[in-house]
Each structure stands twice: as C-alpha cells, then as structure tokens.
Image 1 (spheres, rainbow, N blue to C red):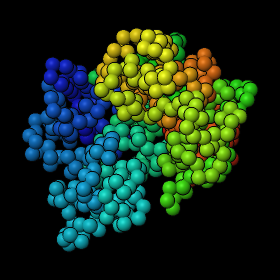
Image 2: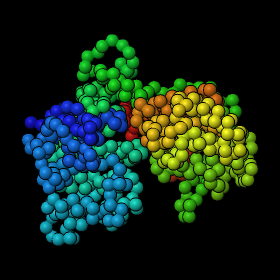
Image 3: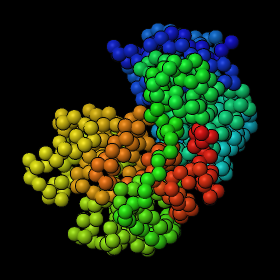
Image 4: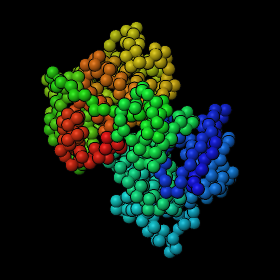
Length: 538
C-alpha cells in the first residue's frame, strides 16, 4: 500500500487551472523526485499535499491520501496536526522560512511542542532534544549553534536547521522543495547525504521537488517529470542518469520506455542540462593576455578574504572561477573590476597597470570591464523601462545623442535576441531569462573587452540557462569578448569555460584547462568539488 496516494488532483488559482489530473504515489521508505521547470506545477503540488497553497489557490478535484486518510477533506485545524507530525516540509529558502528574531534551537523545539512530542523533563530536556536533532541534521557544534539567530549561520547551516525541524517528530513522509538549490555543490552533497542517512534510518519516505534532473537521478528511486501541470513521464532513476548514451537526447528512432527518456519535454530538459553536456572543446591559446592579476590580497578587518591570488584572462577566452561560498570568488571579481582596491598585488589590463587607477583612468577601466550580476530580478530597476536601462551606461559616459542611443539600444536588444518592443516594457513584464538578456545587453553597451559573469544563470531554469549560455558563446564569437565566469555550478563551468581557477579560503589551489582539471584534478579540494557534482560518474 502506498504511503502517499494522489489521484486525479486538480488545482486552480482563480479561473486558471495549474494542476490537471495528477496521479502520484510514494511508498514507505521510497525517495521520489518530482522534476520540472518553473511554472510546471511541482511546487504547487507539494503545497497542495500539505495544505499550504497561497491565497487564491484551491484544490478543485481529486484526492490526496496519506495512509488512507483523504487530506483534502480535512479542515485547517486537522491539517495543522498532520503537518510536522505526519508530513515534514523542508522549504526552498531558509532565509524566509526561519524567524529572524528567534534562536534556531527554539525554532526546532517549537516543532516538538506544537505536536506534543516534547520530551519529559521540562525546558532543559526540550533544549537538549533540539540540540540532538540539530546534530543529527549535520549541524557542527550544535549546542553553540542552537543559541544563534538565523542570520549568524551560513545558508547550508540554515538549511540543516529546517531539516532538523522537519524531522523532529519523525514523520513518515518528508517533502523537500528545492532544498539545496542555493547551496554550493559540496554543501549540497553534505546536506543531501544527511537527509538520506536520516530518512533511511527512520524508514521515512521523501518527495524531492527539484529542477535538477541530474540531482534527481542521483538521489531518487523514481523520477517523475512535470510540465504545464501534467505528469508527462515517469521511470526509475537509472532512466535519467547522465551516464546513459548521449545519442538518445537528439532526434532518432523510438526507444523502449523505461530505458531512456521518451517524452519530448524530458528530452529537452536533458539536452539543456549542463550535467548532460559534453566537455567544452579545447581551443587554441589566446593571442595575447587581456587581464593579468598577480599577488592579490584583500582583508576585511581581521579576515583575510584573498591571499596571493594570480589570475590571467586572454583575449576571447573564458576563464571559470570556482569554489565554495567564502572562497573569494566575488572578492576577486570586485578587485578585477576595480569596484574595490586590493590591499596589495597588481592588476594589468591590456598592458596597462590599473591597480591604483583613479579619475578618468578608472572610468576608462570600467568602460572596458563590465559585470553581469547573478540575480536578474534585483539587477534591473523595476521603475524604469528597458530602453533607458540598457542606455544608462551610454548616458553615464556621454556617448551619442538621444537618437543614437535609441539606435544602439535597438541594436543591443537584437544582439541578445529580444524583440524591439521590449524597450518599452518594464522588468516586471519580462521572464527571468528575458531579464538576464537585458542585463547582458546593458553590459555590452559600452563595447567592453572583458565581461565578468557573476553566477549569471544560477537563478534560471535549465532550458533558460542553456539559452543564456548559448547566447554568451555566440556573442563571444561575434565580438571577441573575454569572460571571467564565476559559478558554484561546476556542470555549467565544464560547458562554457576554456580554463578553470579553483579558489579555496582565498587562495588558488589549482588552475588549468577545463578538460584537464575535470578529468585529472591534482588538488584534493578540486577532487572533492568534482565528486560532489550530481552525475559526476558521467
């Protein structure tokens, strides 16, 4: 008998139906992954199961049964008794899910109190149990961390707090909604390893909601693919593993279902996922060096963020800068772009020492070095229309009159494959991928030589990621651009970079051509990073 049994589930927001006749089962102790892009309906399904649909959302048909009990017929009070006690829920964003005003130990203890699962022995026993749960979830020095507030913990540590709270009452089912999407690969692996060990030990079933098909194939027993509110394909995890022959991704003869993905949507996901892509072909060495940074050091108070970092980027080359959060990637980018000054070291741009550049010399550097930021939702002013946003660098540098700037904006939008009428829209009217194209267009406005791409696709679905990465490749070929590509996603780096620089704790531990670093890493830390990539066996 299935632990969770969903039959013909339909969910609507107002007049719009977003889930249409979904059937899904999860057996006790089983890990089932639900995969799909933003808007596919996977998070709506997860929220419908636990009765947490946002305002305006409602179940309009079907059943959700947990151990034979139909949850759709329960009132809010009864649902509260199910959440936490019978179904643990790990949301995507720990920064939003945790109360910033309360200590994390108290928030884990609250789950025990609410569901009458607090140990006997009063407040002291409750605190000790909360610490034990945090320790089980992999939080180091749990007793000390329990006394801290969420903002004092890293993203991975906050996610462990949510896991501890979700498993506090030993529920038979845990729903994890994109639980590691914002984490570095090594932290992601540690968190998921702890979840796997805990749930296996308790016999807990897991419904893992994710956009990462390779992660789903690695962690689940079964994978279900959702598109536009409908389940389009289902199969064992091995059916979706990156180790399968790549020939099945493209057009070809019909194959046996259960062996490889068969549905066109699943094949598009596979084709777009960096984890399934081949290595970037090796290219000839650049004709000359565009950027050379040597001995960079940066301190913030008593913290050494960078120490003796060397970095070069050639004309038309893409260099990947990888490492965990806190490794110094973003600090390096800020120094190279001269948004901050290094405490020591030297930065040479196209033969000119710009380490201490000021005034007009510094403005010239910033004209030649532009940045595409991580978040396309935060990088664009929502009050402005796209035309003025793209033209802003031209105005700032006094380039052209209004007519010339309008023409340049039209040219830039065309370069990033956006229609001309986008210039009249505002960022809120565009998708995430369209916004990132606008950010790229703005970065190209001044015809830079070097573009620093700081996690440019981490907030995007895999198919949109693929479109943006293909666009960056095309622009590089057309314009001769050099990229410094910062990413925690090594699958993306493998696809787009010619060389890789690996940072750890502010120091370069390895550098070399992408193929060599991926297939023959020399430093233990690099090997650890690569082993943590979902589908690394491919």
